[in-house]
Image (cartoon, rainbow, N blue to C red; front, side):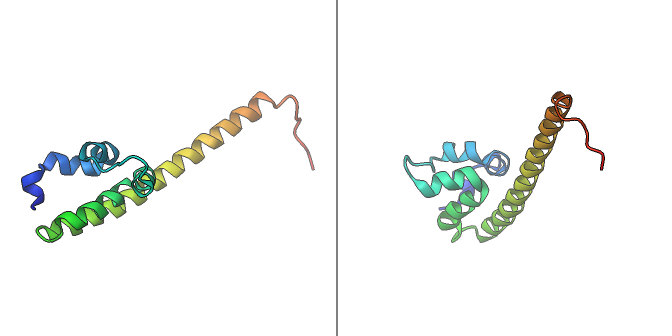
Length: 110
């Protein structure tokens, strides 16, 4: 089975940029499948790379290696960006809370 006869370049780009929707389209998420749901939630591109490795490695090993490299790098970058955004939102909320309730807690001078 060849990847390029089954799918187009647009599907490959969708796997990279919108992996969760691609997994739903591809039909990978079975009901009550803990592994697929956990992978879909936390590392969707690596989950896709695992699934495609078994199906397409025999005919397209270069594509699978390339997809693994993209999957690992993009999931790491995605995690870093989400963590940074969550931290910035937390700090902004804490600053807003300090400003709102600053009259209750006067500054301490040591």
